[in-house]
Image 1 (tube, protein in one colour):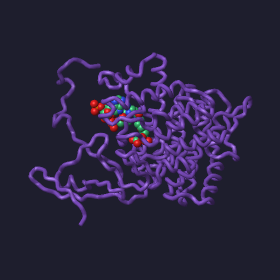
Image 2: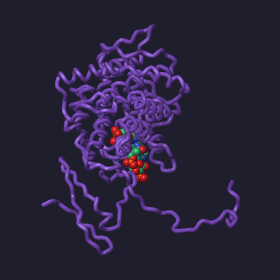
Image 3: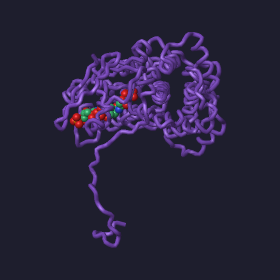
Image 4: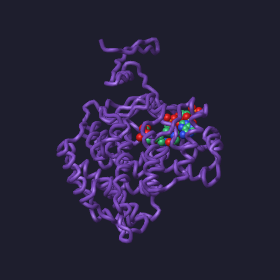
Length: 432
Ligand code: SDX
């Protein structure tokens, strides 16, 4: 017998179906609520609202569990590569050796971008934020690659074109903003090594690909590859539900991710740690400010809508800090500040009571600094990692017969019925 929920409102009782997922999560199916009661539900920020059924990523926020297509993030971070994980997320299965080789060849073949797209960069102000450039460039792909609107086989060329080109666009944004010549992708390098080479190669000091740093970048992007219905993925699904092209949907995901409450937090964490170092703020002062409601200072990189324990990605990222810093033979004073902040915050009642723990962004900036990535490129790095997840979620949403155009309702709290007043009959001071 299917489980149900009983709702009594205005003396009327209605029975609502309960649906259950493969991991035992339950949801009350309210699709018949308004027509049976005239009521809607109210859930600003959708913290308690399931927007879809999905087979891609499973999270358990209380236990700190994250799995892509059932595989724990810890195993993927240890054994997989970013390209293999992208294949898993988008197709639902790990690739065979032949499929992986073919995917890697495609990603290399597709890495150049249309020469006329380069002109876009030249017209941006030098200090333009690369996330704004990236969002525009991905949207422009619809115009430059109209032939890619045809989605063909499983891991199709359109997805690989975006995954390949976003890396070239990102590196190009950095090189042009710093007045350096553009470095083109090399056919002999894998996805991650190519990105690092496009970022840092130079005639004066040719970039030497370091396998450990390439491995660190693979892990970084694996950790960011998907995260179920987060803000930017929801943006991709909502925009994609109007049946607009995939480039426009992905472009809105990049824009949503840019915000400091979301992917922009990795840049905000480093700026916070630099501020603490520069202003000589004590850890205790910093934690006190984060708790003070009158102070808009927040402990960036802490807290999460779903995780009410340590973000499993943050645990792996924290370990990566030591690995990468020892590889580049560098200390980073900001890491010491971050570690002390974590230690004090996790002992503090405010943070414990509100279940505020480090999230993926708290240590990721330290890893990126050690790789030589400039701070305003941090969220771009998050976007490159999240792209396979956005594609997988867009594909699932647009091919799901259960999904419709996103159109939430509201509770209106404005003026009740009132008449138009001709301008010569209006009282009150002039306002313009
Ligand atoms: C990402 O959703 C995802 O999966 C996102 C992500 C992904 O992979 O896609 O994991 C990536 O976006 C990680 C989060 C990055 N953002 C930050 O690190 C910014 C700092 N964190 C917060 O702004 C906040 O924790 C959020 C935005 C992450 C979550 O916000 P919620 O779930 O809406 O929680 P909330 O703002 O309602 O906070 C609950 C309470 C509040 O206090 P009260 O009003 O109950 O007294 O906790 C407090 C908040 O003031 N609080 C914090 C805090 N985070 C929450 N207080 C101080 N410092 C913080 N960082």
